Length: 441
Ligand SMILES: *Cc1c(COP(=O)(O)O)cnc(C)c1O
Image 1 (cartoon, rainbow, N blue to C red):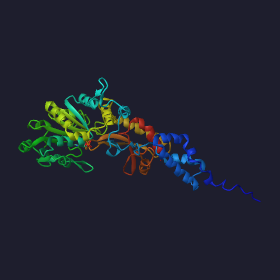
Image 2: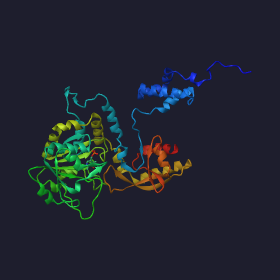
Image 3: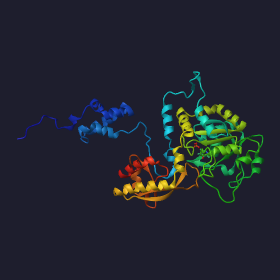
Image 4: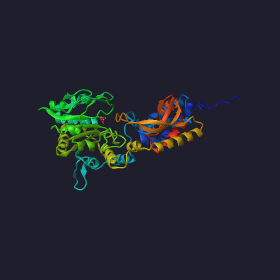
């Protein structure tokens, strides 16, 4: 004879813990501090529902809710860049240095970004970053910081030529930078008129000279960052342009402040100003290795004055950067070498040694991993021809997808039926995490 049990005692629906009890779980309390109580509560409600339908055991409700919650309050996730491309546009361009991350922390709270603590009066915004830039680029007589390189250039065009004046530019420099971003379209959107001179492959000094007239606002020299034209080619340099009279504006793109030995064809701000550019515009998050920002640097007396003109132009207010950018940029310019600089300067022999060590560790775990020599690149739409000798751990191809979906996600590249995890853009401190990610596949 079977004894009847009290009705519902075995019914998991009756044993689902109450919301308050689940929310008291220490891990969920911590999650609520990170993500907000509402979000955690939603996850708990969903987990309770799964317990009622028998999908989750009643005692696992807290763990189930926790598993459904993200690790951070942002949906942006960190990714290990094993592509071999130092400045990867889809991975947020330049990774910030520890110094820049600390600076972000400092600026994140209330801070003296626009207050002179000595006098108690309103201070000039962003002086630290501007001073750091001027110290790093000795030829700069003035500096201002915009949201990004495109903003810096657009602002210069609007402030100096937006009333319908002409900007003289070589046809060889009417370029598309990436994702449909075209320099000529940006310029014309400011109300300035373009006066293209020369041809796609050859432009002479006399082409510029003949185009200069009453309506000329300035001569614009744009670095065609992401392609190279070879053969029957003639380009007029900044030094020659600076002798023609009107101001010369150089959009150098990548934000290299001074020459880099590995990147001889990449223009830098100091050289452009010394050559005679009145204004230089550039990005802060390509080769400069800082946060997204646009640099505006002036050279000589005229350039310094032009920076002031641009800075005081009403539209500048709509393109200024926040305190976080100012803090991270200052730390990137004045602080220790950025991760971009470190990756560019990495010794190929050291990269090979790391690849060998990693492959050996993984092979001991029975993983088909071997070290191979590779070729990495600069990326970020810059230095398209520069090949950076590098090294990678080569794995079976199917690892690529699994690693991308892993935790943390790892982005490698697939070549010749193998998944390559290139170490050029990864700091040595990431090797252990990389090995863990591979083992987790
Ligand atoms: C990248 C680039 C820009 C745009 O800079 P952002 O910081 O991406 O806005 C403009 N001009 C050149 C030559 C570039 O290479």
